[in-house]
Amino acid sequence: SCGLYTADDAPQAFVTPGFVLNLLSGDKSEKKERYRHLLQHGGQLDIEEIMEEKDAIERFRRALSSKVPSLLKWIAKKKQRLSPSGIDMLDMDELERQIEAMKKTRFANKPESIKAKKFLIEQLISRGYKRGEIADRLEMSRKSVYNILKSSL
Image 1 (spheres, one colour):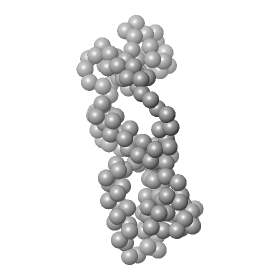
Image 2 (cartoon, helix red, strand yellow):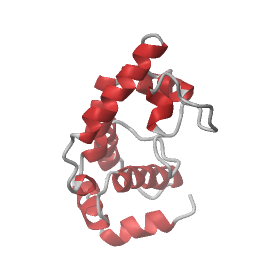
Image 3 (cartoon, one colour):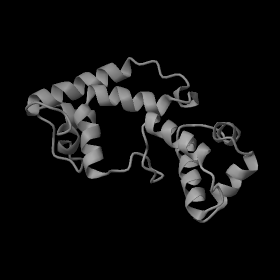
Image 4 (tube, helix red, strand yellow):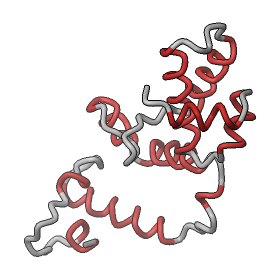
């Protein structure tokens, strides 16, 4: 489908490239050229085992933000979900602040505290952390992590 986004004489198709191209600045031909450049540059990246890296999603989000700032502004404005699991992704700085605040909370067994912990656990899982690493990071047992994830809150 790349031709639909980059070719001036692209045929009509069920894919409508306008949505993606409108995330880029410039007139129609400039947008197509920018998209072509993004495709070429992306093809040169050495991907390796990117999903094994803990901060891969955050680094991707920052890189994307620097290349296409209008995209993340648009997503934030529309409150779109950044993950197929339906979890609103926090940026890493905000996630760290919330983790530190959770560690200081005295009322750990209240439903709202458990719900907040579940949210933080899901944030870390979506970034590739394993349950044991999450337990260490949140200063709780691995069993607590599993129980919170199992909870229906």
